[in-house]
Length: 456
Ligand code: GLY
Ligand code: MN
Ligand code: MN
Image (cartoon, rainbow, N blue to C red; front, top):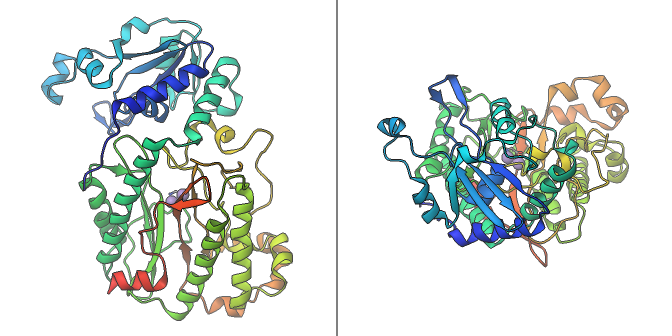
């Protein structure tokens, strides 16, 4: 499978929508590639997401000027010296023909004034952009933007929050490749292999489809380490393997899917019981997704279902509503239930919480809520992840100050029986539709039976 590209009219329509919202000119930069360890050994270039949204191509060193009457792309002219190494580079005319845009040399932009911009991604980009626009711009800080910069951020958020048809098609492409990656991971899993082998099998599908990984793959038998970056662990037949792996299409749209499966191909009794609790919480949260629903309530539905499930297993004792109100869900599920998904895996997080939190809302303090990256009312065209988990994290469960008065509600003897369950997360990509939702990653096996069936 090879991912399909959007037509040039898609980007023209997005540029027109942005330009109709602006009162003055704005610049969206593609950015610069980043060095790995020395100047000439560089990470593959991936343009900044706002630029990709409007242009669809990663053109290093380019910048798109949008003004109320239209758009002009400023790009570096082909460099004959560099072409020795890169092969022929598109000329500005080639870009213009391909993109259906006026394209000018980037030098012509130098020193332009009174142009709105978004925060640059890193210091190199900040220096470059500050020079182009003749004013000081610093990385980060989307919340602190003022004036025309803030208006630009709000316009981009309004456009990107509600995915157009082409964006939905891209998200579906990303989900389809991600599906193949997870199937490959399940099928490649064997005791005695290292986590890295399963990661390789999964990423091979992504690379073979012309995609990149949308974020650093998590493939680990220590799922309780939430963003585990290690891949050197050796799988044993008693382990669960947690794989949080997603593809990114060449236009930059992301998949973000987690599955947790038994290395042996068969869940143990305790693994199965804990898995069913997480799955019930995930399904309860997905079932709430609909236009007008506040995402915080989706998060809370997952937490409440998790507490109900843990009471059912005998790990917690008491009434679900009371235990949830006292923070019991966060003992085992300390992160948010999900986030926006689009071009960025945490979509538009370059703008801080400005994109994820509706005006007037901010992060709650409670342990189970403070890592929630999204609290908006859902609307058709939004895409979110739903990703509850159950983790036995020593940093929480072994510290009296974290467990607090919930200790009396916790049955440690029962919990000890679940020693072969360190971490389970189940994550899907969910599009909000006019009447409810569509799970874009629904094809990825998820029920106990479906997972075991793939692994035989
Ligand atoms: N893969 C990162 C996340 O799920 O948020
Ligand atoms: Mn996610
Ligand atoms: Mn994920």
